[in-house]
Image (cartoon, rainbow, N blue to C red):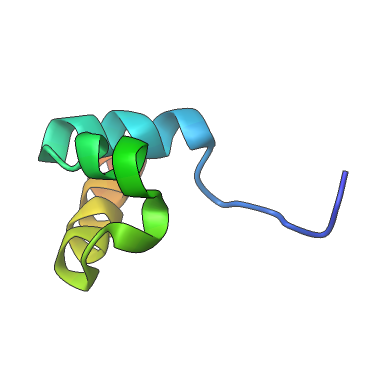
Length: 54
């Protein structure tokens, strides 16, 4: 294991990207191609999911 710790699992990021309709971009161009706005939306969605699970 390296130093690269991720708060969100890859699986969760992919699920959220699918819900927001940006997963095709991720598949074709990688995470770097996702707009800042969509990254923000992914974070909001992750927070909602975390709040539901606690």
